[in-house]
Image: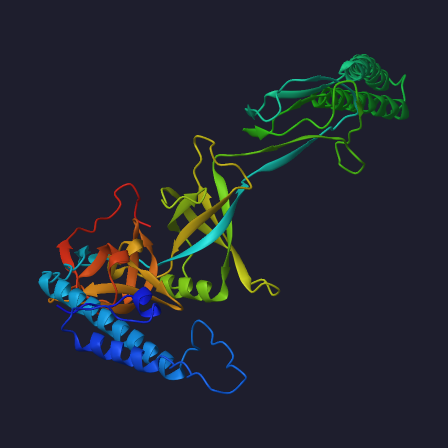
Length: 450
């Protein structure tokens, strides 16, 4: 059995092995030859200097030691490599992993009208600034800020006493005019009687006739003054002109407010009120979108149903009617203003809110539908992963359209017979094998046609 020398053994200057080892014999012979022979004594008078206890190392001996160290290292490395190779050969082969499992489905086919999505903002159909029409001291506020008020409900009260006095004065003037009218009638009758008996003149009759007509006119003037005073008295009570939500009061009780029925002078703004049901949804269409809409509808008046999504929700479950498109494109923005009317019976929508809406922009036609999650963005294009009969994944670029009941419309690039990966996209890559499992694609039943 061959003995492998260690580094320590080599450093001691010899290799220990079995008696029959040729290597050990050669090493011993080499060591004996390399020992220096002591110098012989001389007969001269001067003795030779003493020799050191050990001789200096020979260069040949050092090189041989390095050779033996390299040989031993190579033998050890070969033994280790052989053992590892034997271990690898004895282990069983690992089976390749099975293809990943994905869910596939064929595109859903439906007849859908093409739609375009816009961002709009709600606005009130009616918005009123409540201003005082008569001046005076504000004595009462009859509402809570932000509440819903009904048409005709009292909101502000201005001190009515000065206007009641004016009305009483106008009523007194009416009674005075009526008394004068009665006197004028009597005087006219007497003047006519005297004229018939030749004791009166025609001039006197004419005078009494004019007095009688003036008395009648005075009655009408007094009645008008009563109506004017009554109107000021009514304006001292500010009521809601419509049903809606009122804002915060801008004037507190005790303040002196100025008012004008004609609006020709500065008047005090008391509050604002807006209607809520129905409500407008205003949005802007680009020139391209407007032309597409006109081509689809033949230039007829807009009367299309639109689907609306509130608060950024994915569902378009609120619906309204597109009933107005402006008559000119804005020169600065290149857009045209449009408007939809939306029912708001629960008063949940407030003017100023934003919403997305879908407007029909194409005539209905056959369309393929896929879940939005099955479409992968790839830089500037959209791609779907299809699975062939042999399980190979093939990407297909597609042109997508809007959403219809939760599914994305596919305009081009896909056929109705393609098997599309709808779940498990993270486990597939182009050209790889997969294990397809049949799945279903269904419309969102809670989302009305959009």
